[in-house]
Image (tube, rainbow, N blue to C red; front, top):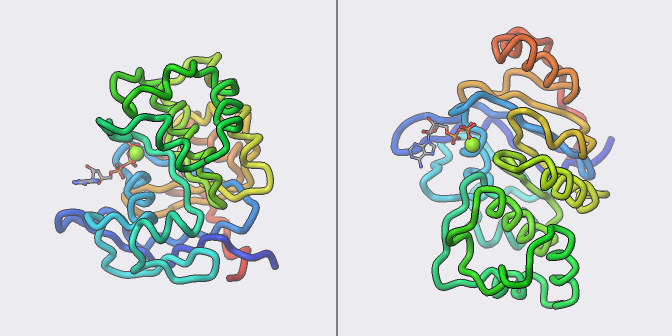
Length: 246
Ligand SMILES: Nc1ncnc2c1ncn2[C@@H]1O[C@H](COP(=O)(O)OP(=O)(O)OP(=O)(O)O)[C@@H](O)[C@H]1O
Ligand SMILES: [Mg+2]
């Protein structure tokens, strides 16, 4: 049996006293790419926030095991150092911090930064701009992907990397994400699955009302959601996901 890079066990999370995640169980074997679908407000981004350990996302029960270590109580910076890299759905504007500064910190080799910029078709001038300040929606997505690539983590999380991205940039981002994921583990949140044209995913899960209700083939599940809506997921045949050990 392969090893898990991430195992989420019976995780329940509250924000401001409101239950957002209920008994979430998720296993991602090393080297696999998993997809997370779910309606708006079902808790997908909150699951990522809890994975990163943001204090507003209070874990009321359950555990998060990463690379065989229980990280449930670790601070966010320790989790990131262990190799969790996240491209956020709605990253903040960071005034006073240039994109180039954070990229150099994450990836000291300037030539490699130059190569990444060429790949995502970002002009050098973006390095001199405050992070996300005045960036268009698609540019914010590119900036997030750039930072994740520069971080070079072992576990890559992309929260809606394809939303608001035009077809040409989707091809560019999809291709470099696919290259970057080679041999790595990842969790990708996507609504319409357009990014899946470029990325081979091993497994998909559906989160509804804070609980994973369905797991299985990404193509099959996406097809059912597009044809029958999320209502199908509540009655979908659950696939047993215990496929890896710690
Ligand atoms: N910091 C917060 N404060 C208050 N409510 C929150 C907070 N974070 C999440 N929520 C609530 O938790 C629920 C789940 O939100 P979340 O962002 O995780 O959904 P999502 O599945 O990512 O949705 P979408 O597909 O729209 O991105 C929503 O009702 C949201 O308003
Ligand atoms: Mg979200």
